[in-house]
Length: 90
Figure (cartoon, rainbow, N blue to C red):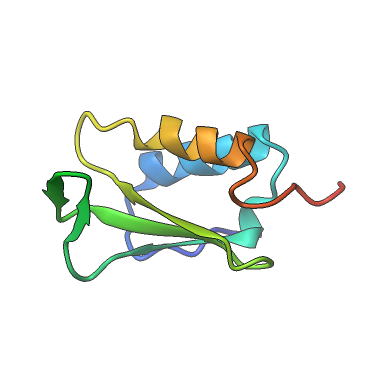
């Protein structure tokens, strides 16, 4: 089981994997990709935009992973709110 990443920033992705586990998800069900082009999120432009996708459902969300951004908290909130579906029974 592993996450699929377009970058090798270990600490960042280890935090995401732990957040997935804490919410009852298998990190191996998820893929995260860097968006090649900057995306508009609200009023801000960011070169560090990533797309998190659950492989089994296709559900996905964009996150701006800029210094000081609350992207991990946003991902946690999205997982808890069911935006990626329900966790698989373990």
